[in-house]
Length: 107
Image (cartoon, rainbow, N blue to C red; front, side, top):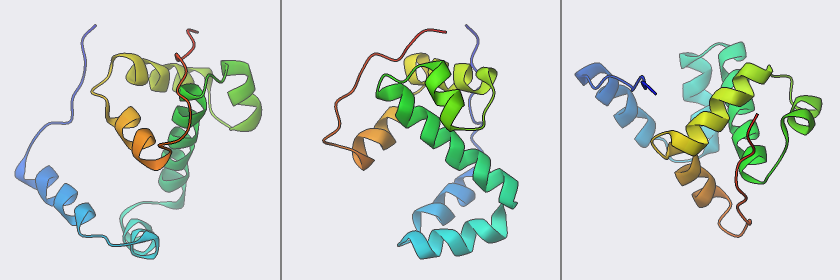
């Protein structure tokens, strides 16, 4: 499967370096409120919620009943969890180190 990766560039490096300077959730709210629209922020938050639910063994049906996302979004996140660069799982492991991981469901 062909994968689209974030293209490395000085501009992208600068963005990621800016994010790494944030020290707490309040600073994140301030920065991301300036950087993103309300809808973009909500979409990113929903993707993290879906990734967590998938990693805990949630089914597509149960996720769709709790999070207003399409099946294609859930499929995309599930694909990234299974075959991606490991970013979702790395963050989930750091945020929820004591939670048991499950095999992510197939569509």
